[in-house]
Length: 226
Image 1 (spheres, one colour):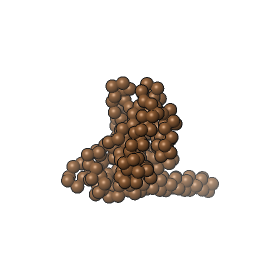
Image 2 (image 1 turned 30 degrees about the vertical axis):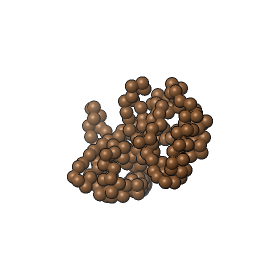
Image 3 (image 1 turned 180 degrees about the horizontal axis):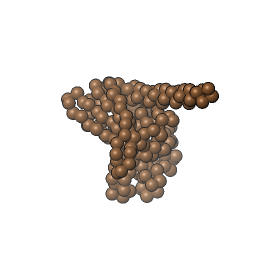
Image 4 (image 1 turned 90 degrees about the vertical axis):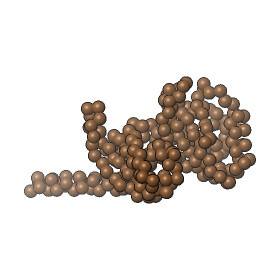
């Protein structure tokens, strides 16, 4: 009798854990849909990679007006989709080694991307620096912003101040910011770098800004407006 009770308790624990896991996954998918709208097909499984079993979760996005409008920047947006999903998984992050993203455009074009959990964890860490950078920009605190640059970068506080002041003169104040994805790039002087893309909503317009980080020390090596 005790053994039967123990088995039932064990089964209940598994069932509850599975329900929590599904709830976290559904919430993470919803965060993606809140951003991109459209439709999302979900699948998960395992695949063999370099002799090891790799667990993955795939999101297939269709009928997204935003992605159709931004079809030239799908790599950035696919990274944002993967990050939105992964960062909202909570305790379920450990269940997946890779997040796959498949984007179906209205013209029939289909593009597929994948991101390792290691990459997504790295971006989660670097977003702490991103948050401080955005705060410094919104506060016009260029003294603090200049300290976040790599020592090898030749830039003065006055140059940063002049850059953002000239933008404010044209477009007004920054009223809102939004993280919109990331990518890895090869550079001549720093090897592989991480590029975080940010949308800055000013009083009169929205601008796209890239913050480029040195992977070795998480210092900024460039801020570029597209």
